[in-house]
Image 1 (spheres, rainbow over the protein chains, first blue to last red):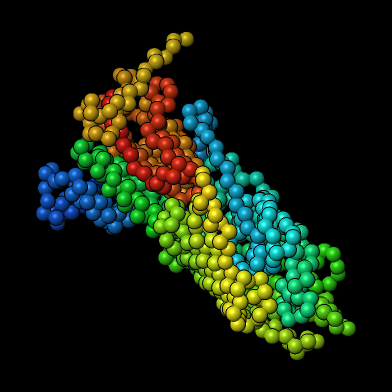
Image 2 (spheres, rainbow over the protein chains, first blue to last red):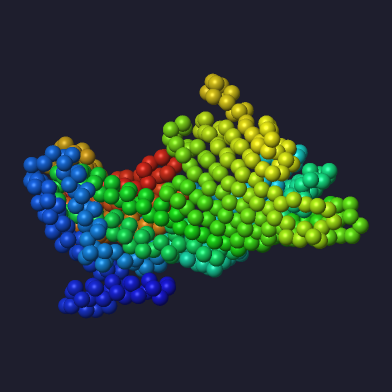
Length: 457
Length: 125
């Protein structure tokens, strides 16, 4: 428990004691919850009366639609009421609450079912086989094995990515007993550390040395890649303690407003519930937007090693940054410094290639539910700049490269997408894999998913 | 050992009672017990259950709580859930005198339900 939250709980407890001097014994979680109930009941009477008066309406004679609107307005006012905000502090005791064995037995007997899901990533910023894309600053949270069955750079190959997290080395609290917030709080520092190892990928020489103009630049090498990431700033997980003022405070008190079902005519309970669900949904959307927009910064170190021949070891390190905008847009910026050692490329003496790469992309999900239900058009725009920092020490002339790209992925069914991308670059070698090239512009498209639209289901 | 009387929990349409349409009625016999049982997945926002204007459950984990004291007459039982986690699900139900669970609300992301809900029932004791 951080000092800040301990202080807020103590402050809240003090409020309880001040409000009820007769019951000046040690506050309990139940007494804090009861205090919130008490404040909600007391303030609701005043807020509802004010709201009704402001509308010049008589609640008893209103239509249901009008009542729903009035209740929603009153609930919004209540959520902003200073007295309610005072008690909307995070109740940290909820994190330590457990399901007792007796409760466990009852729940298991009656309703228990289980669900399992998995996540996977493949370190795209330093894993050339993944396309050298801008990489999100977060990482897979659980120990996971991701088998990438797709062909990379048209090479006839597959690669295996193994996503690791230091957390995998430790046992976490039993999920059927402890809260998810309790489990997330465990080993907080280790949750910041993660990494990936990639076996069996085939990587073009140019992606190891960064030099693309040579005859062998597209020769594929068997490579092993590793990376380690440490999250320095931010946490885009709603379970993180930085979101407690919302999850355990403001949003929790909105849920607790159901006690007001007792303060309205029983015939209004259904419309009141609809109004409260509207407020609840708005607050939930606001929370998730806030989480999504929050900045996150990670440090990354990575290495690429050829498995079939010596030399050309590439080491990279740098920073990965994410910043969200609106609800469905995200800016990702990577700044990486890389050194490739023991490079020959026909020269008599081995040399090093040092380069600095900045990779930025702005992605957005558009037209959700418009083309296909529950799916959006994924739009990504970005730029990559690669600068050699030791040009004078290299035995051949090299050119700094840049690339601008815009990619659309349009959903056409529950599973299929049509990818379309446009690349503008000063490096023509970048355009070799595109379907259509004009000058320094390359266009790639894949309409192979279209026939599935016309197949009988 | 005396066998507990088997009481059939009654969830009846409100059209048959004085309660408003859209709400279920839970009838608890004299001297009977009412236990609220909640099964949830990963929660970050505590769900709440209220009875007669008093929060009886505010929690992030599965709970099975007997409603005490049960007030005579008709009282509103309400609940609220809000989810942020992938794969969310929740089930809330009740058991009278330890009998079979009667589900009041069962929602999940898998069923494409809305990720937040507010509900209510009438408890007649």
